[in-house]
Image (cartoon, rainbow, N blue to C red):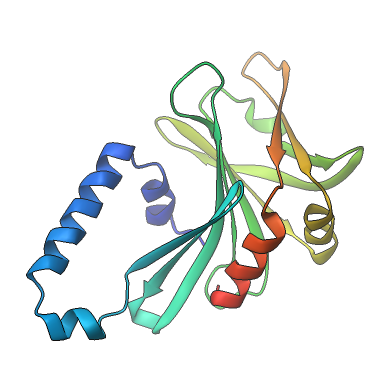
Length: 186
């Protein structure tokens, strides 16, 4: 689902993403009309309430890879406080959740994910970069089923001072996004 390079791409600023889209548009405009008609899109997105499905062509495998993402906006600030992605690695049947949190989290505490009072997953921190840390968990069918049935889940973790922190994550659109992600090829 996520190589180190793909993870770094997720951290691109909106400006860099916009520049990429402009470059893709310029490239497409220069293509001959018959190439435009036969060329597959490199990346597509679809939004399902609070979740977005992002698919891209994997040229080396002649396959489409998809993941579902949610960006959790920071309150009273620009940017995001967390990013979540759900998908599969090529050739792997396990569904994974990757959580991106800002630097300054207490790494030994990991990220606990609950629906109501029920723990559904524990995401272990894998690595930190300049501006964020990544935690990863495998989601079994029971956890996915609970996520499909719920309206929200809670992610809890600790900050650097080991104070408890939590974020409420909307599951609105999760079922439709999940179905689209895994039907499309991931």
